[in-house]
Image (cartoon, helix red, strand yellow):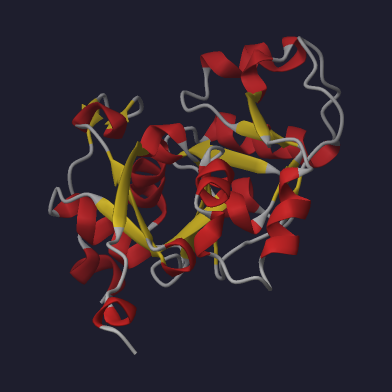
Length: 226
């Protein structure tokens, strides 16, 4: 064995913006998500009973989103930049040990561009994923039938169209997410399969609370999570 065989490839870091991601919070990481199939409509949607109930509840308490946004298979997401505010309002609702699943639409291309680092066993799954259309998201308040809610619910809610695969997602523990933002350090996730670190940057304005009309800068983990 030569010395070159012992040299490990240098870990690359790719910086992305947190507000360019879409997020859900669940007890466990999510890897495969199926949204609405077909093209995104320009203006109309016919909301089902569950969505109308969710919106009516949010309209009554728009300052305090409930975990119902992320009920199983809802297909609804918040912008990644809005998750810190969401946690500030819901940290006492049993989410301290939950996981944030972040959808990064461009991540699949990052995997593909570094596919030489993947094991041969993983290539068929990646190739299958690349045959699918990339997931897309639409602000539900852009739908004509839901525009009235935008006046009373200040934070956009996004609906998934298409399919999210394991090559579109990263995962962050809620505690790590809060600790990083509290200390104003970037969020980092290592993807060992392709020797890559994804760094999520953010700016103070990402944490503006329309309800409080101020920037949320800190969440007390010790007080809320023990």
